[in-house]
Image 1 (cartoon, rainbow, N blue to C red):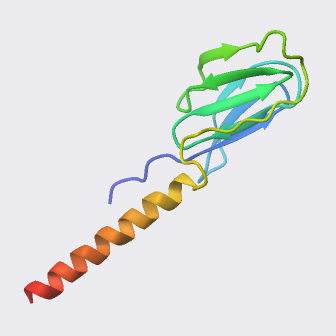
Image 2 (cartoon, helix red, strand yellow):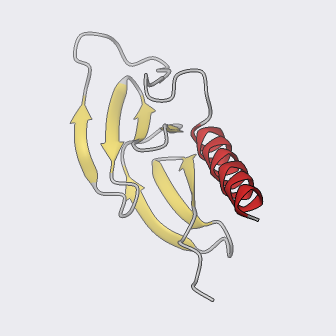
Image 3 (cartoon, rainbow, N blue to C red):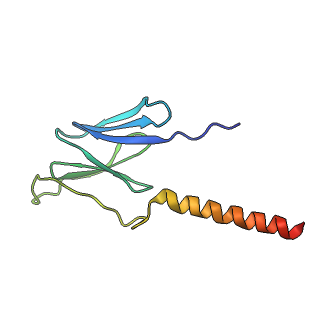
Length: 114
């Protein structure tokens, strides 16, 4: 049986972001950003982190910084994040619904050919 792909859990924690293996809890990577509480968001494709008025986009596989925006002139307060990707829907739910639709189609086709 093939091994399931690694599922990561992203944790914003003092000074950075860490990725943990969902099955074992083992540390996969660590990315140091800036002192302070780090807020993270995963939109199904991109991983973002923010603290003290700055925003980073991180590579979810390695934690490497893809880009960093200091948001100059906007202050150093709390930042909230949102993405237009998968607006209003959790990404995994779309996949589950599509898999259920395909399974129903396959079952109907098998039943029709019997």
